[in-house]
Image (cartoon, rainbow, N blue to C red; front, side, top):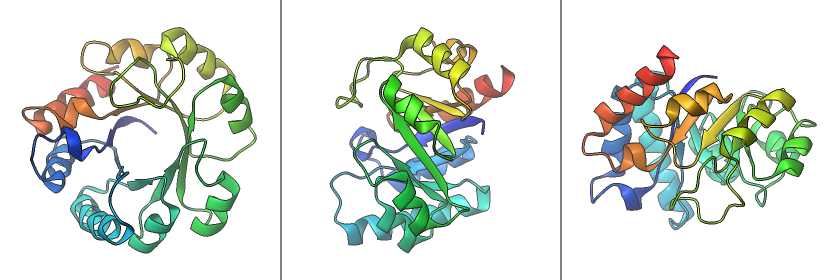
Amino acid sequence: MRGIYLVTDRSLCRGRPLTEIVRQAAEGKVAYVQLREKELPASDFIEEAREIKKILEPYYIPLIINDRVDVALVCGAAGVHLGQSDMSYSAARKKLGEKAIIGLSVDNWHDVEEAEKLDVYYIAASPVFATPTKTDTKEPWGLEGLKKIKQFSRHPIVAIGGINETNISDVIGAGADCIAVVSAICAADDPEIAARKLSDLIRSF
C-alpha cells in the first residue's frame, strides 16, 4: 500500500459538509479514506458511510471504517481500522471475511510484536509526532521509532500524527509506506489542493 490515507474528523472541517471534504480529497488523489465518527448514533453513521462510499466508488478508493465492525458490515465498506481496545483482529476477520482490509494501531513495542502474529493489512504507528487530534495515545514514536518498526515488522506501515508538507519526506524516509493525515486535509483552505500536494510528495519519493 502506498499514498495518502485520509482520516476524517468533522470537527476540523470548519463547518463544511464532511461529504464535500471527502469528495475534494478524492479529486486530490488520496489512496484511502477512513471514516471516524466517535459521536454519531449507529444509524446516522451507517447512512453517512453509505453516502461516502458512493462518493469514493468512481475513484476506486477503499472506504475503511474506524472501530465499528458492525457499521463496516452493513454499509459494505472495504474494511475496518482497529485500535488496541477495539474488537480483536480474529473476531473482526471472522465477521468481515478474508478479503476485508483490517488495519491495526500500534501504540508501543509490545503492540508491534503482537501484530507480527496477525495477518493484518497494515499497522498504524500512532502517533509519529505529538498532535492535538490524537490525545489518547502513548509517547510519540518519532522517526527513530518508525525506523525500528520498519526493520522489524513484515507489515506495511501507515504513519499518523502530526504529519504535513514540512515533514512528510522525513517520515517516508524513516520507513512509512502510507501517510495518514487528518487536519492537513480536513482543515485545509482547499482540501483538494492539500491532498494533491501531499499525494504528489509521496509519489515523488
